Image 1 (spheres, rainbow, N blue to C red):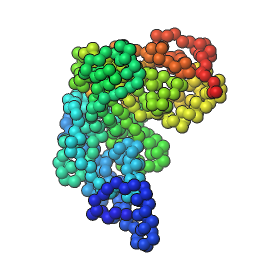
Image 2: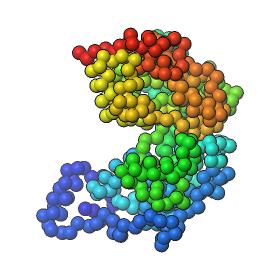
Image 3: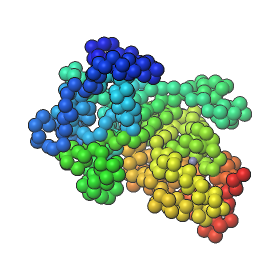
Image 4: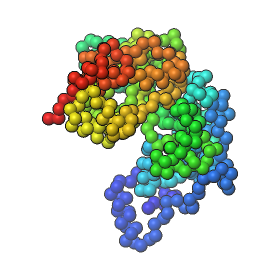
Length: 445
Ligand SMILES: [Zn+2]
């Protein structure tokens, strides 16, 4: 195990194993990972607990204060939020430290990481109603809270903003077929490369606001989180004074087509796709659902909107398999395929297993739209009634809803789409409950 004064370089697994074996053979006692006892911060007012003030929704970043969650020695007494940075990746951080790849007190160097686009501060960033699931100042932490960093406190960004080119096979084909024109700004060349600005967001929850969106009291929300995370984060129960929680889950990525400043200006037409992750279809192109076809349609329509002088936005949420996860999703697939896969029983099969048909609960989804300062959506590239209702309930009108074109629906995914239409999904096609009995998926070969 390397000493703390050494320069840390990445080690291969073989090197780590060799070092571990050598240490074992030489009988030299291993150096402890942490050279201090465990310090708990379980109760407000206990010795060493002195949180930095954090006023969610305050009118400026300075008055709001930083979200401080690290347990580094300088920062620990001043933590004012529960959880850890990096969403679910905090676990890999732990493995890196435990394995000796990363010093426990490593401090990131944020030089040159600043956003490629300066999103103007919006009215929605203030108050406790419109933004409760992300830190509106999360992209500017190194600048806004530089004085904290200078003093050695570990505060970190929860939003990053960069730019890139997309290369999507279906879009390349459409460019070649002349269905999408090359304008040199949005669609860059004959390969169909698309220029985008993208924003990655880790979840930062203001618990009273999250509870309100779900219509429950904060105590019940805290208790459910504590219990369902296996008793992790006991501060959810013991520290009601800490109102902010960084949950160990995936966040979202927003892809912007055209100049980002158009998002907050209602004079520009906006095309929006809100997409929840479906790895099997999005990446591996499984044909049992319409996820990838709808996502690609969303990307192409967003690009077209930008070409027409408007702006496009695709927001991608890490909520795999309706937030039930891939294991549950595949168990449901098995049930479906072994019972004749009919649209009539599509939701029932999920309910039998998961107890609900959907766990995505779109209540927190509109925060990112508020963060951009979006006032209305001209073209919503989604049929979901849950997404529609959540956005409209948050005071953002949707002027037009655009269903996935029929030609893009794989035959095996007819079961899903027709069941969803009967359950309330927006569609120009009429589907009745009686029709569902006749819609069947492909049998396993
Ligand atoms: Zn899917």
